Figure 1 (tube, rainbow, N blue to C red):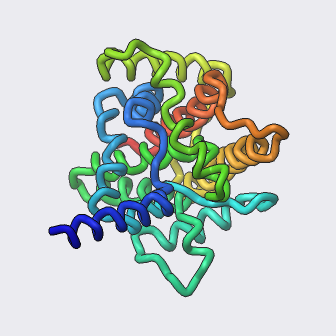
Figure 2: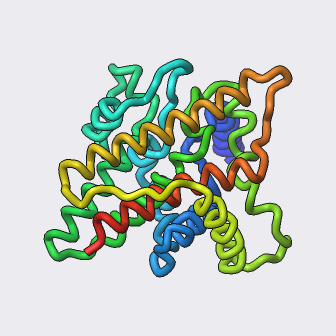
Figure 3: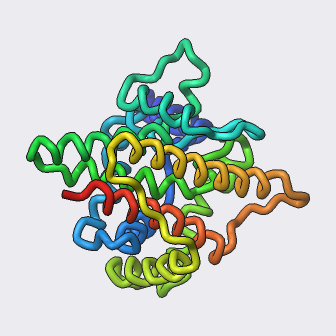
Length: 258
């Protein structure tokens, strides 16, 4: 028994040295993005991808981030290259594969949704994955290198807008509060529509993914490289980032819903 306890303690220490990067916006924030996008009835599905990674581990975790190297500009070509890796085991002979697959996962999950709907099957779960990944896209710490700065400050930035409410705030009240703030920022953005022509849709989708990803990475690296470093995003900045995710999700749903 003593040996077992020592082993468990040792494993716990090792795990703490290599934290899981798949953390992201907290549940209410992901649900608020869906609600702000007008998908109220299915907002709860936006948390499913985080539940899946508890079972699938790295296979699912890789879909939640992309460690963009500073100075690298994300392009639609990169997005489609990552699409090809969706739900495939990590290639340990390819160091690039450890960077993650977030941008491709967005396209792939939406593609799964379209195919499932076209086949007359239940497609809400695949929609839930798409909701979650699009939410992760606006999180700066999911778009930069997972270095000491990211490790030290990632978790604290995940729930910034959630902790501003009362300690006993009910989840539905919190989601509504966050969604209202996100929608207010969405109203300040130019409207976004994606083509319903399937080929043009994917081109426009990849372009918008790349655009949001580059801005997220820019913010993340500007925080890291500031002197002194900026360790916490401002609340208004978080809502603005979430507004870009919600706007894209709204456009995707409008272009693909049946």
